[in-house]
Image (cartoon, rainbow, N blue to C red; front, side, top):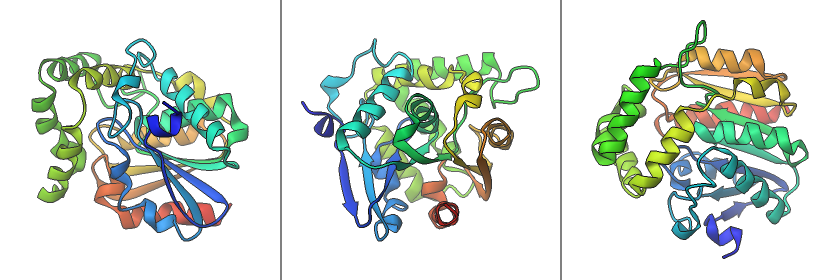
Length: 265
């Protein structure tokens, strides 16, 4: 199966400046439905599903390849080369933010700019670094996910969505989570939450926008500032919103932040 079908790539819009959206853990490309269309008038919009998510080819998931984020980084680079796009604006939510950082370090010529939406290089507290979780608490959280991914989702999604907790939005995210194979979710969660890519940050030379929610239960505001301090040429924009999904919970503010940033390029 070719890579476009494997990732269920979809593309629309106008203009020669491509903007590629990559979703986070538990969701798929439909998570961009309130944001991506806003860029279609001036950009070629490209959406895709990570292997193991959404309508990607389930048979393509390999538990060895995707044990770490490296497999996803390889996929992204292969996808961009296959599509033969000019330098892209890459928008990555959560773990896909770091996938984009790692890919841009390896092949910076493929990227014009990065937009890191609620991204984190490390989720575990470590000395003066406040990643959001103590190691023991994170292991308990992952243990809960291992035992019952559906129950874990029902417990976690309201916190991920944020304090507003609009019932229809919570239901929408839960419906996306329900499509994920629990075995894939278990491995992807560990590849995400137990990773530590802080040492890689100084190697990024592609300019980036860091979009951080003021109150995020998964990625505290400290992490956004940490990224800003350690990514050369970065811009930090803190949105006055709660939750881990600003593109769902605050799409208007998210669109405005990205548009302002790209207008300066």
